[in-house]
Amino acid sequence: MADLLDRVVVPVASEDDAEASARALARQSYGEAVFVHVVEKAGGAPDKAGVEQRELEAEEMFEAARAVLGDVETDIYYGTDVVETIFDAAEDVDASAVVVTPRGGNRLVQLATGDVALRMVTENDRPVVVLPADQDGEGGT
Image (cartoon, rainbow, N blue to C red):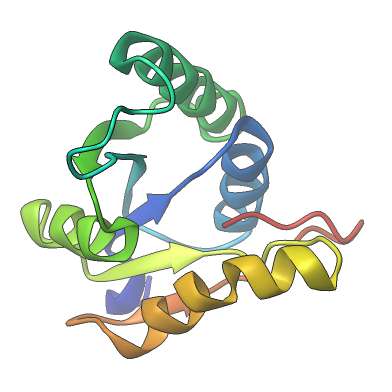
């Protein structure tokens, strides 16, 4: 097992994302995985959805990951900056890397998520590993 994948943080944004990320990770030799969902806080403005609702959605994401990998560690983080919060989570669990899978979608979706993806690989203090998506083209984070 490579040291790079000894203890990884896997950020997830939806059930499909969690399942795709878990499938991609399952094809690798890795040590421990911590699946993390970031609840984006509005920074003073009213939140779009209640905390309870978002926590329930996160649990559904984590269940999707568990359906593929079995028992995995999970955690919910709260923050106004998703990328910063992901790397805070990685630091908290002493992750060797952050693991993501590419998101599918049309050019508009890619444009909208591109800033986050770019920041994931340029504004960090640890490696970011991009795993290939499933053969059917379904991606993840």
